[in-house]
Amino acid sequence: MSHSFFCFQSLKYVSQPSYSYWCWAACLEQMIKGLNAKSKIGTKQCELASTYKDIKENHPIDSLLIGNINNYKSSNCCSASNKIPNGCNIALEENDLKSIFGFSGFNATEIKDCNSLKDFGFIKQTLIDNQSPIVLKVRKNGKAHMNIISGYGKLNGCEYLLISDPLESIGETYQEFSGLINPREIDRVWITKLGVENLEHDAYLEKSLEIVNDFINKFLTNIEHYSSEKGLENSALSNPWKYLANKDPLYVAQSIKEFMSNEKLTIDFELFNFFDELTYDSDVKNLSSCEQEINKDLVVYTDINFINQSFLDESTQKDINTRLINKINKGNALSYIKDFATSIEIKVDDDTIMVKPINYPKDYEIKNEWTTYEVFKNQISINPKIVYFNEDLNTRPSQKIKLSIN
Amino acid sequence: MAHENLKFPLSLVKNDIWQPIFGAQHHGTFYMIYIKIKSYEKVQNDFGKTEHTYNCEFRLQNYRGAITMGLVRSKIPKFTTDTSEAKLGEILNLNLEVSPFKKNDYLRNEKIKLLKPIESKLVTVINVFVLSPPIDLFNPNDLDNSLYLNPYTHLRDGDEYTEVAFRKSGTDQPFQSPGNMGWPGMGFCIPDICIFD
Image (cartoon, rainbow over all chains, first blue to last red; front, side, top):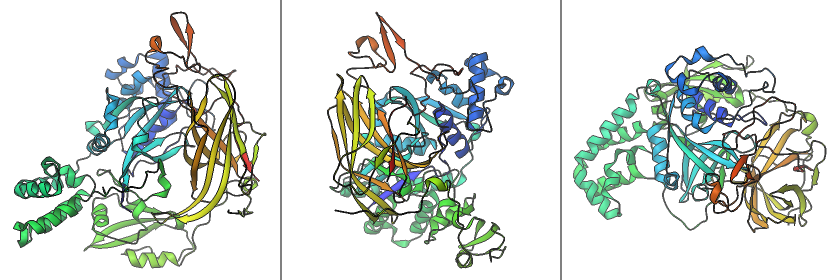
């Protein structure tokens, strides 16, 4: 099985409150928090709704573009209970989207031609280039609704997009690409990008890009030979993103540096093998039919967010490799191990991953000091796993059903 | 939105009968949806995760009305926790798409893949998403040339059109234009809730 799934791992799913019109606010909260946007109108759904309600009731939205948004916040749509305060259950007018996203730290640009969405490559490249989701206005039961595209993937030659629907009953799913783009369902589309002031300087990516460009320039002739033999367009391998899109930039840069230090550089065979390795894209077609949707919880995926990566989901993986070390070196290496309710700090010393527990159950036999990852794993595994209470015992009987299977 | 107390009983062991799970009237047509749960298997998927797969078929039966309703596809099921006043606890959402002006009564070989098995007394809500009429019949951006008006969004008023909006009585929520982005994922109270034996 060949597969590759990508998503912004720092985007944590946010659902809209039940029976509310806050799909837009849920999408925006997810993006603001996940991408560290400098929002001027709050981060939580209720805060976003408060500002928007105030704007709609008191001020023309365009006049706020030159003013201080904080001067206009007077509504309070936040509530301790599950109920949304009166007058706060408001939908987003599509013509206000650009402004509201702007106040939230995003540049939103509408794609006038929805046919662009029929090009999987366009969507993939837009996500990679902008490092931010694509916003969709979709039609559900005749009403308008907001979804975001926050990832993509391939499985056995089939292409998928990760669609995040703030309706909790739908959630996040990788949907088969060819069945997704339906003009009956998608009304308008916006690409988003963090405002300039929000972008962190990604020195790792820039340095990697520089190394890849040097490599391309040096071996342009070999690239032409390789492309000709493989039936590829020359331009594909002349584009540095072909190398960087599906792999960690540091991993690619490191591989190139090691390869260029090799004396066999001029031999086409060696180079061609290296091109294969660098550009491997899991794009092996087979005859099996595509599944229409794939549950995000049932797949293993990697991230496309080079700027603000989370180490969380990989902390318990068995295979510690260069890619993981690169991630740790890039920072944000704090992790939480749910099974043991334990927070750990992570660093790399001489290519060895070191771990230090920060918060953990007080009766655990565990040392609050730096140890190697392997030692830490052994230490924590002798402690009991956390057991969580059932949410509602009345509706969760433990009796098991036995099926008769024909 | 489901009725809180009236639920369709669902059996995992009656593998060869159509069990009713949903009833509604859309575009003037009253129809019901049935499920046949044929078998269960526990498998390890390609990613090494354990899946509980229920092999099913869905059937839509149109009963009364001029517009033919048809099944489009099933979508990924999800477990959620009900936070409404009904306090249904953990519920399994089975998601289906239905379209007006479509002839398709069956969805065969559907696989409901779950991360945990269905247990007795599990409450299941059938979320049916009704797609808009085909674009060549109803184009919300070109009402003048539409052959049909979606009665859930627009009413004809001579040469003009009126937008349809709802709000719960007794509240002061603003009425929403159908073009505004905000969909609560619910309609009027219909029989769409089931409980496993």
